[in-house]
Image 1 (spheres, rainbow, N blue to C red):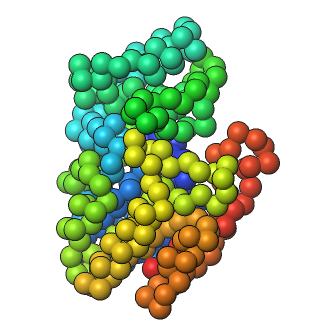
Image 2: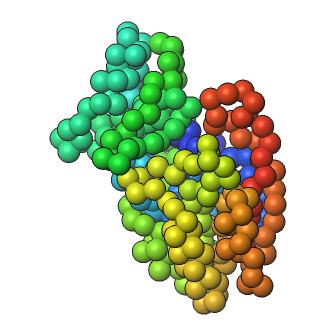
Length: 275
């Protein structure tokens, strides 16, 4: 089977995969510095596997990728244990795992399983941390029959990730390795289009306007040395301004989004694909 994301990731690209893949060449090494849920990588691998370098600044996410690649059986064993505890008392189990602070004592499989559990049992699949670096998403009030994982998909993800570089690092360091003929897809935390949509807290340091500008500059340097660059972002005025010059092609696409708490927030929204 074709592997699919093993977590629900806010802003995931599952609904834009076809449009994104049409803009990524089938040669060279594929780099994805904000890998998130990995929808683009897994779809790309399913169509024409390429050498790939995946990275993200979220250390727990990267730990999950590495564990799935290296030891999927141990991971599913721990997930089965968590699922049994959740079935007995969903709310108590969620907050015990969420508020557990001694992460350094966990082995790789336990750390990855905790991350996946909080993603699946938390509110709307959000990953949000406060300024102190603490995960603070409330319970999604999922019932005792919560499905934490699909075994076949975990194994498919493991197979897809073999011989793939997986690194915990920022996009600047990650993109430095891209060479002429490679492709880089940047899917950063989006610039907010309104005051109420300002969600960028995937890591302790939120992605702000200065970061968006630096990302633009990084992407331009890559283009000028022969790397195929594709970015996605919101239609915020800041983004339109940053990519308004002759170096960029900006295309507006519509995508169904459902990350909000209210039903009216689940609707088609415009996003930008920039190359």
